[in-house]
Image 1: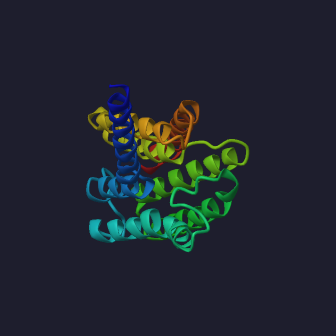
Image 2: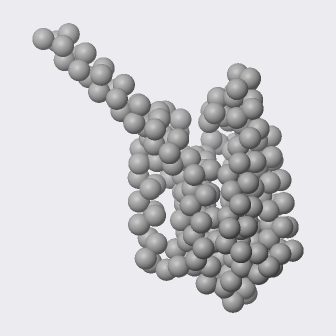
Image 3: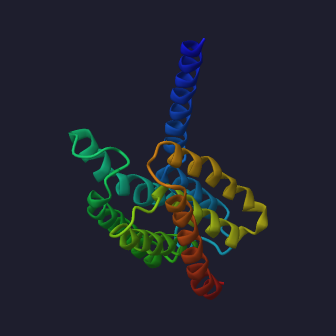
Length: 210
């Protein structure tokens, strides 16, 4: 009887970890970046400057979703790190690569006068920089920051109708804690930090773009 109970508990644990892994991959930073890009590219309340929705989406996809994770994918394939770069000490070079991509995107959107996407780019620059600096001392959650920032930007621009996006934080925080990738405080801190920075950037920049 005890053996069967232990077996059931073991199976349940494996199942929960599998679900947590799935959540971590489905609600990863690149996926959220694509969602944010689609929102701003196709529903911009202030126009898209010299580009159209499809061009903005393509640029956003490349510079927000593909290029930032390309170095991670490369070194994970070589076995140097895992896909989540779990070791805090190894994260800084990957943060710098992501920052370079976001800064380049900012330049492109500034030159093409796509103000709404420029705003999103600057948000990514500021949040990533803050997370990188924090990571030098403490392993803050990239997953929760990657949702908190874009969700806040979307809510700020489109209003409370977008508030349900914050619900994505619940399964993500659960998944990262369940996988022991982060503590609850590290996950919540990533969320709070990204929300505060995004609100600040939106207040400073978005109000000047209208």
